[in-house]
Image (tube, rainbow, N blue to C red; front, side):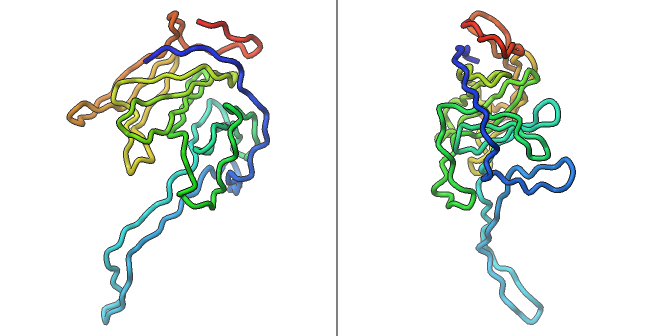
Length: 223
C-alpha cells in the first residue's frame, strides 16, 4: 500500500445531526439507516386466488456507512458528506470529525437522483484509526482510503493496485476488508479470472513507521 503523509488536525465538535435516524428501541440499540423497497410486480385475481406476475424489486441505496469502535460506540456518516460522528448506542454524540467543511447532505426523503455518495465504506483499526473508503464511479479504479488517526486528525490517503474492495451487488457494497492492528489489512481479493482469495497488506509511513495510537496532545511529526 502506498505511504501516507501527515496533515493538520481536522476535528470539530458538532451536534449529532437530526437527519440521522434516532428512533432507537429501548436498551442499547441504535437505528443507523433505513431502506425502502419497491416492486413492479402485479397481482391478478383468478378462481384459485391471487397470482403475482413478474416484476422487479428495487431496494433504495444505502445512505450511510458505519463501523463499531472498541467499546460502546459506533462511527456513522452520511455517504454524501465527509462528516463522521462517534455515537453511543443510546444516540449521544461523543465527537465529530469532518474534512474540508463539507456541506450538509440531502435529506433522507430526497430523491436518489439528488444523492451523490462520496464514501463507499468505513473501517476502524484497533488503534482507533478511521479508514474511509472513497466511492468510485468506475469500479475498475484502484480503491482509495482517506485515513484519520485516533485523535481525529486527517493523515492522508492510501491506495492499492490489488483487486480488493471490489464493488458488487449493483455498485453499492464492496467486498469485505478487515482492518487489523499495526496497519495490517486482510482483504477479499480476486484474480484476473475472478477467483477469490485472501490478501494480507500492511500500511506504514514512508520512513517505515507502523500505525500506532497517537498522543492526542502532541502534533504528529512528518515521516
